Length: 127
Image (cartoon, rainbow, N blue to C red; front, side, top):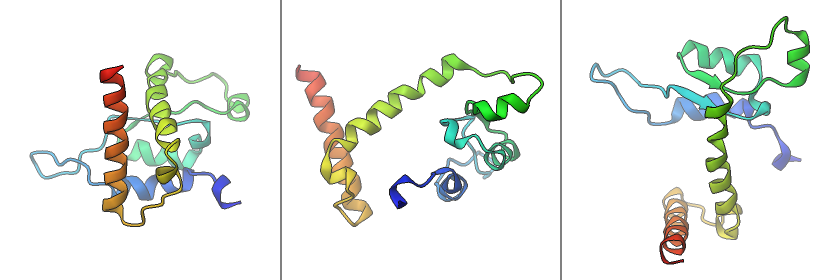
């Protein structure tokens, strides 16, 4: 089923197409770290991140750890902060209009995301 497809093959094309900041020298600036779930734990992604000097915060799958002599270092405290983004995405998906991508134009979709964020913020502000 298409909705259950793994998202890992799409990581590099999405980040390559993302308008990242430019340095003063005009070079593309990549993020320092990228956090992902175990589904992103594939050699292709880790190599892609290494080529761009991006630290990966992706836990290894258990089948990968079995083949390793020693478990690599993993920053659990930083990885835990990923939870805030996961909760935000989950909250946004509660809005059916966003979850089903009702708006076909990207500009309209972004406006709906902004309205949902205003709603979330105002609920927290006036609660």
